[in-house]
Image: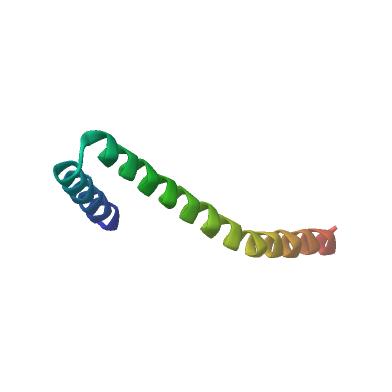
Length: 67
C-alpha cells in the first residue's frame, strides 16, 4: 500500500514538473530525484551493515560452540 502511494506521489511530482518546466529540465529533475532515492537506499544499507556483522559473528560463535 505504501509503495503504491509513493508511486502515485512520484507520478504527481513528475507531472507537475513536466507541466511547469520544459521537458528537458523536467526529466533532469526526475533523474536527480531518483538519484537522491538511490543515495538514501545506499545509506540505509550501510547503516544496517554493522547489525549484519554482529548477527554473523554471533552465529559463527554458536556454530563453534556446537562443534
